[in-house]
Amino acid sequence: MSIEEKISNIKIKIKGKADLIAVSKTRTIQEIREAYNAGQLKFGENRVQEIVNKQNSLPNDIEWHMIGHLQKNKVKYIAKFIKLIHSLDRISLAKEIDKQAKKENRIINCLIQLKISKDETKFGLQISEFQNFYESLKTYHNINIIGLMGMATFTNDDDLIDEEFKIIKKIFDDIIPTDNKFKVLSIGMSDDYDIALKNGSNMIRVGSKIFGKRI
Ligand SMILES: *Cc1c(COP(=O)(O)O)cnc(C)c1O
Image (cartoon, rainbow, N blue to C red; front, side):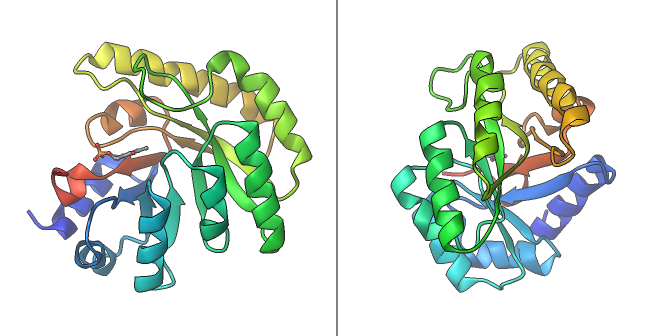
């Protein structure tokens, strides 16, 4: 199946309910171009150097999403062009994004990344810290918090994944009535986006189901 066919199959499953972010980390410019030529304009990357190189080499109407752990000292390289940072999980990072956004005369959209999985390696803010963190971000005027991002446990246990997505959806739903900028729930990847969509995801991040397995 071509990249174009894979994208169109995923779009059929989304039924217009979610944005598709094509996760292009480790993929070549050529592969990204193939997706772009099929009409895909939103791409996600997890490394600063890679996203900068690709942004420089590809058309300007692409929306670049930072989905991976972000180091403070690298924010300055993406502040000019980044469309959405999915991985805001600490105050020191918020402070730096705000500072770099100000320099660029921009307001940068961010999602708060919540740790919903039991995996030890995953980044993200602890759920118990969410409320305080969210409140304290209100002092940063060059950051727009527009929603939440989460990654479920890497497992075949669909019930566990479902439980974890329900936790983040509940937090999302609690904020919505109080904040008209809060709109995006970024949950769901290649192996669990169907469960995410059932739980109200409106942004899925799909890599291998579009480009094939990463090696
Ligand atoms: C790699 C990655 C994805 C996509 O993973 P696939 O399983 O290839 O779809 C989604 N979100 C994040 C944060 C990632 O790092």
